Image (cartoon, rainbow, N blue to C red):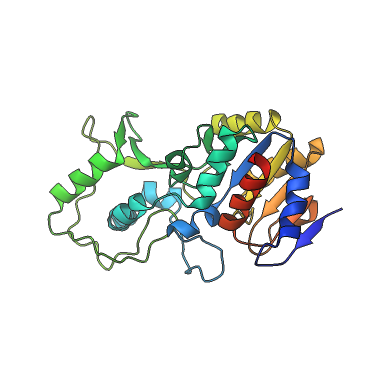
Length: 281
């Protein structure tokens, strides 16, 4: 039977139900963009989120103009994106892992904030903005080094103090004229951020790593994801088949509300902090 909680204040009674479902169990955590909104990174689907049309992998790989637009926008947003810091929700999950209550985090986010918060076992399902790789020779580059090269090749670019940042660190640029797209310094090949674009599949080895984490756990906590992306839904379905508790913390509906043991309709930061206090105290 599903318990659905609608109190935005995440009352003590709401938290008690989630704690009861998770207490004494090794909890695998699946996070989405909602976990990072309090760090200043917007999500795609939350209330008030700007309308975005993310670039697909097909567009990026096949179209020079699309690729130029991506790199300009990505560079403009990079410094703001990279400067984001973990919030209390990220920190709570790291504390629960240290205490043994959480077995690890599977995240759909590419911001790296779980690692910066101190979580150790993190499966980045959709990759990371920290790295860029060559689609031809496979050489990997640190994004910070690439950002410095982009600025050296395009000295006219100025990064604004305030940008309309997207969930993937992208910004819609006003102009791309004259921009020099970075190329691989080893072979001259096409560079691509180490992230899963729309239209791409999650790498099989990454999904298997996420499945392994879930198999070693006996409860699943979903935080800040509407579960629109199939990879997340598949993990929830595996938890359902095993009949382990599923707790969902998210503002608004998700695709798995009907299968949740407890659904907390509230912000992730305050709920994760409260769960950490209750499960590790």
